[in-house]
Image 1 (cartoon, chains in turn purple, brown):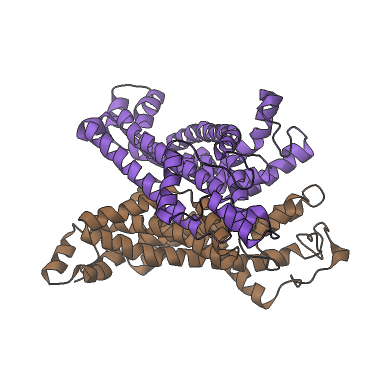
Image 2 (cartoon, helix red, strand yellow):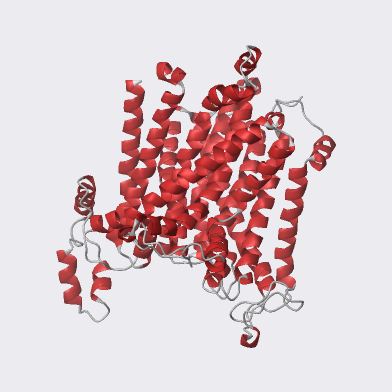
Length: 315
Length: 289
């Protein structure tokens, strides 16, 4: 187990280092001189050169990479070119929107998907299964930003229950803030829930064909107990895998959804930073997102061992 | 004697008969063909010219003259959806081509070689998977500039590890078989075996994955063009139409409803087609239904 844990940890770290090199290299070839962009078109070549020196843009490539990577490790991301504040402050501020959004969406999709998957699997081939899997099939096909527009039309424009966009900030109170995250979270959750429900169903059906399920039924356990205690637990590995993968989708999904709802989150920050050539913000936020994806996948890998004791002894 | 068929070979007519009884396949097939036909027709004829702006007809609701209404420039939404289909299909299809063309040889090579080569390729795969695909697509289109061609590259790159993974997993299951041993004994190189014996046996897997990635590509293209990074105006694209619709939701909801439905129907059709093919050709998945 320890050896397995160490190997997974080493692979994750190596992936992270490689990712940082890729991100750094990609942004090196991004056209546009940050110093020129900061000073505007009227600045003289001398002024630009001076600022380039101040920003350390003229240092050798390797040195700049090491500086940047060293900063990342110590959580000092540098200063944003366009906002002129430390990137860390920006990230902290935006994370207060994006993290709750992603977590609510993840919770929503899990709460919807697992019962639907269970329901479908236990009624395989019957009307209930056909209807819920048809709905899931439809859910997979709906682009989340279009679903978001429809939600805005119905719940914000028509029924006027929630705001159509924007974020009042947590200082405006928990409820108003949560209310403005509700539609975005639903929009993000629906396609994910549809995928998760399908995976849950097929994993459960695979497990329900196993001999030990028949044994459990034969010894007189009620179907409900068998389904929840025996089948669901054994079907958790594929479900967890998809949950881990979905985290990356959720993070990326926030880029579009935050644009639809004008939410000042991390996704909108990185999108604006890319269009404004605010390289340092892009680098930092992308690395943060990549690190989050790698960390979540590591946790998912390790949780296999918790769910399935056989993996603990084998590794 | 056939060497590369390991399951009892089904006759073509048998497969076709099964296909026609499969609701998912039939529905998916009809939708997909319909969308393709609409895209082709758009080259020859559309109800209205999508490049001509008729301000007098702007934001009109659905009517007999304009079935799906008009947009803020008075352009016919139905005509724009028809022309937009071309763009969506072209981007997604070429992106699948890139993914298959590069990913499948890589995956097959990794499976054939094993060892260090395999390990290295899989680590690179992990690396690509660590990047949220849409985020990287946005970065790529930001570097090379927005446009349909760069959207294809951005989406295509993320298809590569997907196909590499599927090809590798499929090939690894084929390599220990007897007929591969026989081919080896007859002196064939591992490249030859991969092409002649492994690839035909994983073609189904690749076809199913291909329809899934096609559908995902349509969604990704819509997302990119919604953000203004896909096909550029005046070329209509479904995502761009939704962007234009957003600020006019109150006065012209049809501007958002119909392009969105076009995306949903296309993706639904492709997903049903993929599910259907998997069902028909893979006995294991059929048993689970």
